[in-house]
Image 1: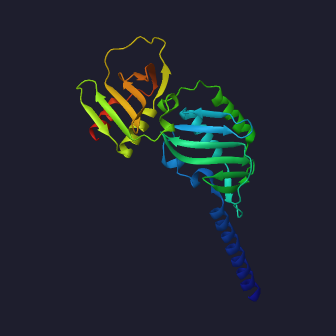
Image 2: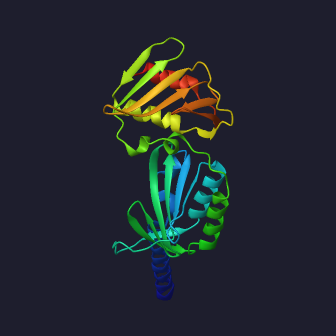
Image 3: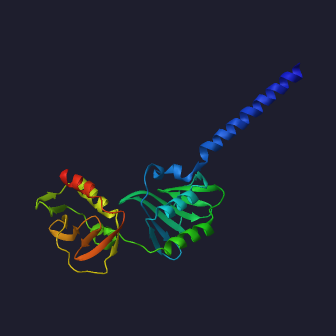
Length: 255
């Protein structure tokens, strides 16, 4: 009887130890994207810088963004006890929703990743750098269609005021509300643009938007229709998606 009791007690101790170890393991092994807000946002653009060559790769291709997210999410991570800055890296990756940076990640090496300033050990498996290289190379081979922030100096200035003229009614709307300014720039920057081959002037426009930093005009943007923009005198076709004129109208009405 004593042997049976001793055996049962031993089994109970072993079960408790294994269960506790499993819980501790689960608590410390976090999947990468669970450590960020990426899953809570629609990522529209990523910037990838190669730490060896310095080359910057940008894409708004949703398929490539999903492929990279899945690749990074396949690794289990454990927060490093020592959080001293490390020198050098293979890739730094910034995730954006429109013009808002959601998260910043750095692949230091196959066994180390830094996420929003915190270092983690890659516990299983190590980062497949060859797979990351191939994915980034496939993005680099794609034609890059810029948005308004790439075609203007907007992001190099603090925008303090915008003037919006309705081309149909002639009404002028002015605002220095930084929140509304950011909302409008985010709305405009979501569209991929390609310079028009035919630069013949087009008569008429739905909105003319003039962007200022204090008293200095930074850029002039005309929304001709859902498919065409004029930026600082140059005409562009709107590639994807087409301009949401209803959203623009609602935003202007709220100013």
